[in-house]
Structures are given as C-alpha cells and as structure tokens.
Image (cartoon, rainbow, N blue to C red; front, top):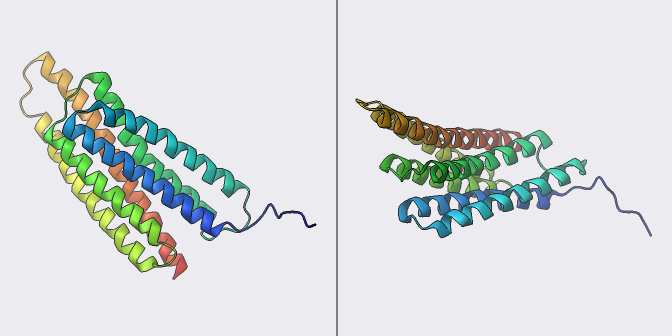
Length: 208
C-alpha cells in the first residue's frame, strides 16, 4: 500500500474553494443590502453568521495551500485573491457593526453604495466561477467589477461632499463623523473589490 502524497495537486479544490468564498461574499452583501432596505434585524444576524462562515472557508483554503506543492494558479495569486474577496465582506460586516453601534439609520448614499458593492460581488463571483473553463469570460466579469468600483467611488465622493454642506451645530458635526466613517468602510470595500478584479486579470494573462 502506497503512502498518500502530501504535495498533491488540488486544482478542483482550490477553484471550488475560491468560488465558495466569493459566493459567501456575495451572500453577505445581499444580506447587507436587504438590511438597509428593510431594517429587518434578521438580515443583520445573518451577516454575522455569513462572515464567520466565510472566514472558515478562507482558513481551509490557506491550510490546503500550505500543504500543496503544485497549484493550478500561482500560490501568491490564490492567496491574494482569497484575501481581497474576504476583505470585501469584512468591510461590509464592519459597516453593519458600526451602524448598529452608532445608531445610524440608512441614508440614500449608503443604500446606493451597498447596492453597487453587491453588484460588484456578483461580478467577482461569476469571474471566479468561469476562471478555469472560460478565462476571457472571467476577465469580462472582472472588468465589470472594476467599472462598478469607479461608480462606487463617485457616489462616495458625492456623499462626502453632501456631509460637509453647512454643518451648524455640534450634533451636525458628530453625525458627519459617524457617516464619514461608514462611507469610508464602503469605499475601502470597493477598493478591495477592484484589487480582486486586478488579480483575476493577472491570472487570466498568465493562463492565456
């Protein structure tokens, strides 16, 4: 009886793990969008669960990566793509967490930003799913994710400008500080989505 090879190729496992992680990020952004639109705390509780599930998926992927010699994609790219996909969800999670701690109600800018991020998460998920069989299709989805990041940044700048239009009282300033922090979290999420799209683009170039 032969011994199992600890340095085995796990091509299907890695791509499946990335797809599962991207699906969790999309699920989390969908729940965040639903929470902002409805105020139903069931969605808020669901986001907490999803974030923990996504962290576990990433831990498993990294553990497999550390025990695999041959990988279908450069291990640095696998690690970076997993990290950036996870970051998108983490920033969504911290946005919700701080909204609840600070007692902030959804604003039109917050709702719009989260809606755009949910679309970007969907494009990233579709890109990862198509990465092996249809790399050019994956690249198309990554390009759309980058375009959505540009839209998010435009909304972010507009939101910040609106915040600083004529504050008059201490209460106004406190509200500005709260909202600026939340908008910053969502802007960071958009930046991480853009980085994930760039990594997918790099992977496609190496594959073709």
